Length: 545
Image (tube, rainbow, N blue to C red):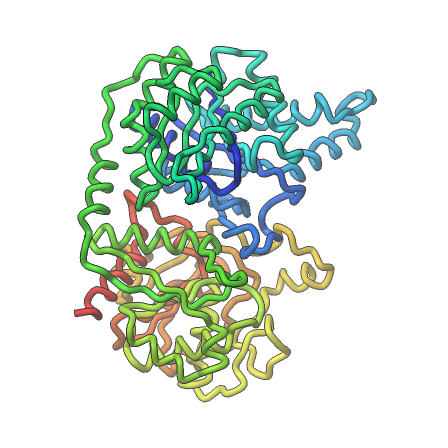
């Protein structure tokens, strides 16, 4: 019988529920248990694929092609395991399933009601994920903040599960304790209100994770204990720290893992083994030599603020590879729009050890990105292109090396030289405006060519050498232009063996000029950095020297 741990948020959003879930999962895994994690999003969207990345953050893609919330990426990184479609729920997905079942007489003609049928659907999906993964512990993150109308039905599902199996369900509240500057004291009242709001939904938290700028002192813990009906040992301090990968280590200072096992009546499977994770944290803390990486993007400006969630997997993949070489990553945000307004500003790229052009959609910022790619190619600056970054690298090469001045992508215009074109099966999709969940999504095979940087990075020893990587795109390198691109020196380092689609391009006689149609960042893990990111960071470090 699996144990279920629900994690909800109090006071405000963005306080780190996803990292808390990931960290708890890591702790339990290192105690010998099989763990999986589920994210519940209160959006009416069926999945995250159609959401604006500036508003919602990165759209993460799983091996089975699910477009989901970025927290799924955190779960995969911390647990070092793949998460699948069953582990992601939205209001839209749940309602869609219930309505479809009703239309097919799945309810036997009775009246279908919001309660209990919607919560029952949520419970069924949670248990289905538990069965598929055969997990000892299922962690369920409820998106949003307690008190919001949107997540009421998910809290109701959690309450109903607790009612049916009291010893198998645990509730954790991640709540924020502000320290107003004019007062200078950590305040517990917002957390007290959050607990009472959760009580009004019929749920008493078993554990409170107190998020704040600094660690909770004994006075604050006692206050929360008295006013929220909790043992003081169940108030876990969760202060701001430099790296998210230190969170599991920080939780264990308050013996969070042991508190969870005791409350659920579970005995330890084996002696704790935090060795690998502790070594990772040690590397993070002791890495002092900087490596400067510039990201030329367009999804990080919102008014006067810079938000980085749109590229969170790219950032973490940079960190993983940097820590592997005991380097301190420094990420700089470079606006593609600025290079369009002032092309000469692209000269600033010389200040960085390596440049990444990540994925994206639409023609905004494309000219600026192409200028950045040209500068990296001509000035031997290590360059790594991801998805759209690969397509723009091909366009830049076609224009400035092959002499195809009209080279472009049909995503941006009806160009004369469509070196990047829409996939044939996508034409009807776009014509009928069926955008959600219709791209080339999920894991596909790629055959690597011997003698290339990519072959070397992945550790290929014989040919054919096949890898599997995750995709999210509609446009591809147009095979009609393969010959002229090859003739002028563009190397096709990776090709999909079934459809002959180019997956990786490289340029010879360059420290590192590699671009992929897939998204390698989605498969990078802190304990297992992605091979291409490792090769890129290695080249960037040498470039620094």
